[in-house]
Image: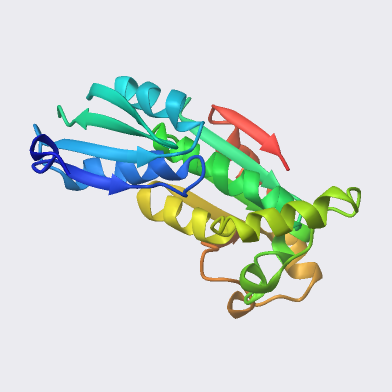
Length: 80
Length: 138
């Protein structure tokens, strides 16, 4: 794992179905501190729309979406 | 109070209990309150022991139903019950048993799965549902 991700909270939701990865992220965000970064890994197609939509609606920041082989990494910063 | 999803769950087959759990989860993600009114076959699906053993699929789809059940099991999809339970831990979801069915079937509180919060009449459910948001019949 890259050094830049070592500070982040990793939520591996691969193999989970809609809305599982989003629910993992919400649960993770609730437990995280403001300013912390989380990464949720998901192979679910619904996540591609649901996660960015939720992050915006909930007032957090989507730092990026990184496509990997068979899944994507959604990098989110808790803002409040 | 627009932030409410109300579901009338009449069906007791697994294929229709999944949308109950998935929509309730989505509503929780959006910060909505969820009111679930389980009635008739829906209440039977919440009888103690049923969530863990009920494998019924809608009989209108004799070819696709069993195939979809197999796919869900092969892909290790969590059960509708586990999804609903997790969503209930994360948000404000209330599961109400329909008083009519409950009385008709001579049920007692201990006959129901603990996820059920209370037994209410149609008037109370409608009054909660009419406070706003979305209401669906499943």
